[in-house]
Length: 454
Ligand code: UD1
Ligand code: MG
Image (cartoon, rainbow, N blue to C red; front, top):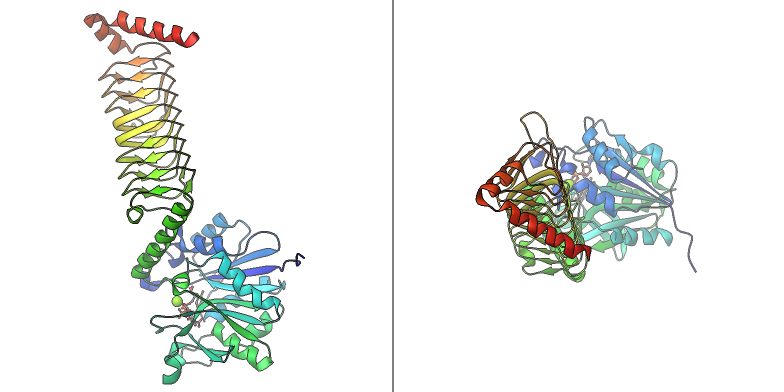
């Protein structure tokens, strides 16, 4: 029988400056696998019917509020004006908590490796009547963490490092910082927390002792240290990146992607793969990339915000900047940079080119060294190239410019005016006439056309 599902409110604490990152960027906006720390946490937090979300941010952190809404449009943000501790931070979202969801989840914005499954595991004891469940882990080095003090299977208190006795400091079972509270008891617990400790802060972990005093049950749910790594420094950011990359590579392999040397491939948290995709060694994939069935990404390619069609072949040494879209069976070879460009099915750009703000029609061939001159020093302009066209090597296409279907641009041309369909560029036709080749080209085209018509 399906139990009616419990409603939840997740409060994400993200008011910290992150001084130890030594950066102007608020801590939770630093990235792991192409997404902010905050985005990772928001992605793992319960979503859908019966869930709500509150993010507690520092004053002057409008960028954090924007990032929250970009990832979860329903997120409410609350400002904590003074940093008086984690319990004080949670209470910044009092209005949301007072609505009384069944489960109140509290998570830190700087623990990007937490999974959705762990949130669910942590909620389970609340169903069975516990007032509070704390996520714990066995720390290799517990220094700095709150220690979980147990009596058998019962959690009796959490002691912060600064307040711990020598005996308590030896405990290695630590507070990960994620907590689930019975939504109807939460305010009573939170309002009971004082700041009588060595730092003079309102500690969220004190909710455990209070719960015990009320005669309510508090429990621990354990997880691995890797999942709850908190990011305070750039070194920890790099460690989290490596844990996340290992996960993403495994997910890709499990999904059938061929990674010849997985440890050399960098993926983003949102990379999408079709079936039978192959990625050669030393490829970097940034955010917003999808790679369709059968595509091959050759070594040393760098791809961001782009979509790659079925059976396309990319690289080695291709660079795709945002807005690149590669059609089925298209080929992009070495030392080709593309940006805001669509390459339709079967088109080829095999060597040494810059193609930006451009549409390239199906089956068109762009010769080596072709440059779309999209920037005139003031603004960007578009290049449109039709189907079955041929752009000879070392041509410059000075945008805005249109090249029609089946047009032929001779090598070394500088195209500043539109070239109509099935035409040869003036430069090339003059040259071909000098060489006696124009007629031959026309013959070839006519022949090809006839074959197609059959
Ligand atoms: C906290 C826990 C500790 C736990 C550890 C796990 C407390 C008192 N201690 O310690 O038991 O083992 O995390 O990493 O909770 N924040 C605010 N406003 C504040 C204070 C903090 O938003 O006034 C935010 C921070 O930005 C951060 C999170 O809360 O995201 C935790 O604060 P932090 O100072 O890192 O706590 P720790 O000392 O690491
Ligand atoms: Mg911390």
